[in-house]
Image 1 (tube, rainbow, N blue to C red):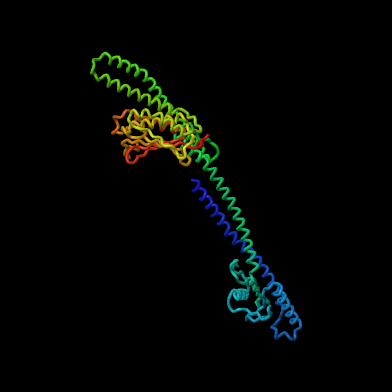
Image 2: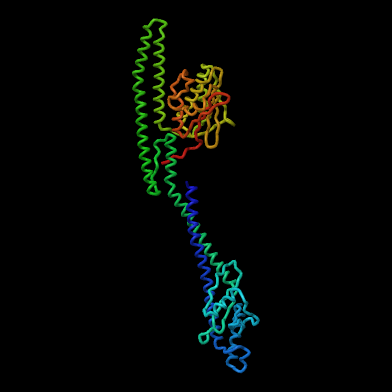
Length: 475
């Protein structure tokens, strides 16, 4: 969820910043150009004021010394302005001929932005609003102001400004804006990371505790700390549900344990009476033996039920354990049983020998391994071999028990380990169908697991796994 929520928040924040950044960049560029346009309008207005009092064209100003002096002043101002700022400037009559211009040979083009500004001023407009100049455009900025005399436009002052400095200022402003956007984006990403962590922290705790409960650690609960109110309510509801489930399971285990314990005494007395009754029956009477055999089978079922209840309710005492030594010892302990059944138990030493440490409850792991070995020896025919191996596989220690029995089908593999389940093909084999269930319960208490698979060419392969390091427990 984090990998989906965090990119979504980042994309949304980036979209908001970009949606604000583009209009701000355009506004900034327009403001820079507006300042330049205002300056050019002031300049053209000043030149228009000088040119307003020039009475006539140059060739007619030979007798009027005042007009000649005004025209000379105008030309001098235009030249100084062009030399100082590098901006071409000219005063043009209505027929586009020049009253004065700087440089002197500059003439008004017949088309283009400059002519449009000139024509707009002829219509009496004080200034022309040019198109926006962008940093990637190499163009001039044309501004024109009319010269009005007696209510009529007699001439136009036109400036043709280079835009290099304007484009540089716009680009510099954009760079500052981009830096601000990047800083805001970094803050937004940090905020998104913190927000995502705050929102998903309860979900992560809930996921860990759900896994703990699913693997048998029923005492795990979610600690309520931070997060949205909806998730805090969900955590409280989950803890209440877990309390109820644990209480129901405790009642069920207590009932099974009590029932098994209470039935043992009457059953033991019944078996004793059957023994005494069998002594009084004539020889060759087999019914008493059959009844006694079924009674012993029922006693075994009660013992297994009691063992399963104890395995599911007993708290594990986890510690660093030499798994290789433990497996080696249990394999040796089961060899006499296997010898009586006509089979062999083979222990395969781990690579390199020596210790193979794991994190487990030695008693629980030994009991689980005993249940698996008992099952493997029972189903391996005479002359067969039960192989027991151990290996360190990543973060786990793997114990493999492979028998030479008939094996199971795919449908049967899906059900193996269920309580009281036995294959229809193996009903004649002694057992209650609880041994592997007990092994699974014992392993789950210590963070381990058990898996089943077919062995080629025939047989069953049981894999027990325990962590190599202490599992992370949720408070």
